[in-house]
Amino acid sequence: MVVINGSITIIALPDIFRGIKLDPLQAGNSAYFLWMLMGFMLITSVLVLTFGRIGDMYGRVRMYNLGFLIFTIFSILTSITWMTGRDGALWLILTRLGQGLGGSLEFANSSAILTDAFPENQRGLALGVNGVAAIAGSFIGLILGGVLAPISWRLVFLVSVPVGVAGTIWAYTKLVDNGVRVPGRIDWKGNIVFALGLTALLAGVVYGIQPYGPHTMGWTNPRVLGALIVGVVLLVAFVFVEKREEQPMFKLPLFRIRAFTAGNVAGLLAALSRGGLQFMLVIWLQGIWLPQHGYDFTRTPLWAGIYMVPLTIGFLIAGPASGILSDRYGSRGFSTIGMVGTAVTFGLLEILPVDFNYLFFALLLLMMGLSMGMFASPNRAAIMNSLPADQRGAGAGMTTTFQNASTVLSIGIFFTVITIGLAAALPAHLYSGLVANGVPRADALRMSHLPPIGTLFAAMLGYNPIQRVLQTSPGLTASLTPTQLHHLTGRSFFPQLISAPFGSGLHYAFTFAIVCSIVAALASLMRGKAYRHGAPHSLLAAAEAGAADEGVVTAPSLPAVGT
Image (cartoon, rainbow, N blue to C red; front, side, top):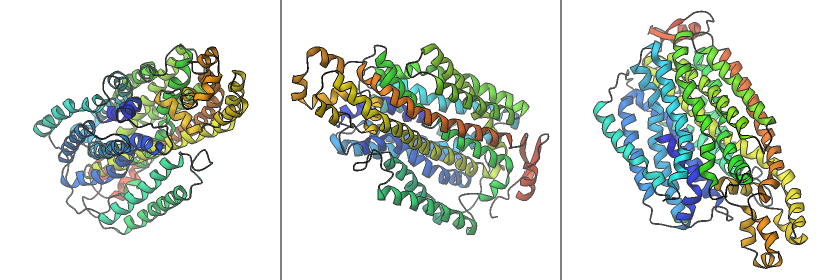
């Protein structure tokens, strides 16, 4: 439910902005677009670690149930806004942050609850099913958004409410807490420093991909640079704060456990490689391929979700299967092969023509889903199995924090490299294409300098940028013949012009993803073989046991509170 809510918004944004009567492509409004899209991910990145620690202290099921309730309440509030324009957009952003608050409580505790509930030889399957539900939800949301948003944008958020109400009642009445509680106090100093540091860093990324003055992006904006520097400084300071804290929120000693550290490094790099993939595929389909194959721009959001179904199918197959097999044979081989397969698939996508044959594209999406599913379930199971029973909430929160923050960073990186490619080639392609179709040179020169990031947003929202520009230039429209006007505003002109520049940027994005996937495979390979915690003992012994490379290692657990 939570993950569907995140992806359903991607497809529904055009109808949402039309519903609140706000043009997302108008100067100054792109910030609302980005915060509505990425604010949910930012808030979960910041809070999930804290809520994992609180779950260890006060009960994971209690925190999970509260998350279900909060998410449902804010889903209702998101759908009932009476405001329009920027006020309406601000209300939606704030209520989506509230949804992120509830989602954080669920993300932080769900893996720990499953780990508590299932024996060691079934955790891979349990976490695999849970991971598949989350990953499949991100793509099911794309289709649901395309179906519901044209009827009413409010349905995009209301669709979660029946599930939320039923799930809240079920969770409060049926869900049993099998976890080990850890008495202690909240590390307020660490929480504040971490939250401020990560918020500053991720906010800098969000604003860094927006235009700044004459620049196509905002990475030279002093405020962006300041936010990034402050974020890094605070996160470095956070490490020193935690070392001195008696009961820290961030369990640094857990990194002495080799399986935990290697799994988190691999997961972080995997999230970096795939975090922006969904956005790139949506833009590729909505802005280029679908219009070139006869789909109207207003229909491309729904069909983009449908054409990406093979990716979901791959996850659905590989997630549970790899979880079951990793329970028997260990996680290292499956997670390593999964990331190698991911790197190979990115390489094949890189050489695929922008105007591809869909059969090959669908096979590559299926291969990507199988590869990522093969990695995700065993990797998460290996991480959770390596944790002491009384530290599972904190450990799961740390893992989710790394992955969510990496996803936001990945989106920023993907958008940046794509925009660099567009900025280098789009103006010349657009100018020559406009002049060749009867647009006066002076007007063509002006129109050729459309902001690249705005062009990407337009493609993602199902708009035709050329049509929008001509609508604001009635004199220019009157000077063109009906045939010229029809061609310029048709389905093929803009997609054909943007294909080559977009392909250039896509090359750099996929190269980055390949490098991340290969390094993730190496990190996964270095985790050692099957490793699980057993009877209470010292953390140092656990770390030494985790370094073993042969056989199944049963390692001792952390003391409940303190060191």
